Image (cartoon, rainbow, N blue to C red):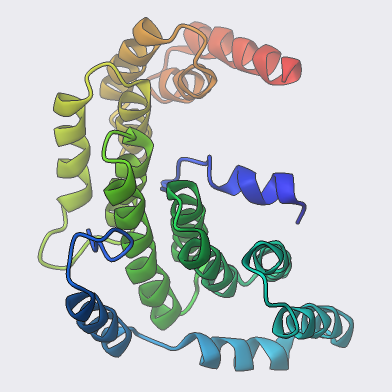
Length: 264
């Protein structure tokens, strides 16, 4: 994965996308206790995931990763380590191991402490939640995605994208005792950020998934009122109108969606 592709992951809004230890809002001792508690309750361990992956990878791919890991072990400056960690994260992601890719993205976030790094970390783990076949991997990634997005929020509480991604993480894998937590969070964001198209497109996306096409169309029209050239809203409107049986509208928005995509 190239540096540009790696950065792109962080801009994706997921179906995919507040522990404040990234900010000095808690005493160091309390931060350590919370981090220890997180590790104790995780469903699996990244070292176990790596050992399993090493047994599955083709020799050529494994040797490439091991060479990068050796380079990392010999590197001491933070800036150089970040570049190598990006390579490792990208390699694991390309090979179909987003949980391990997320681990290295988390190391980058720990080193740099930026909201974008935590957002990329959370998004990578959230992709893992969507793709994981084993429940232990899904729970591992879900827990870490939540933490990463909460860290991004703590650094920039006014960036609605981080909050939307956190809410989507809860909708993708709801807590057993709060099955509507993610949806309720999005509705609260609608009240807090009424001028943000991403909130309306996200709610519309969920409505399409649950077959509430008329509601999705309403949300998407609200997004277009705020941002007439919103590509995501236009493409989703094609799906929503198709689901609602509005063939002419669906065809018109589908064509507009294709035209805008071709211009990118």
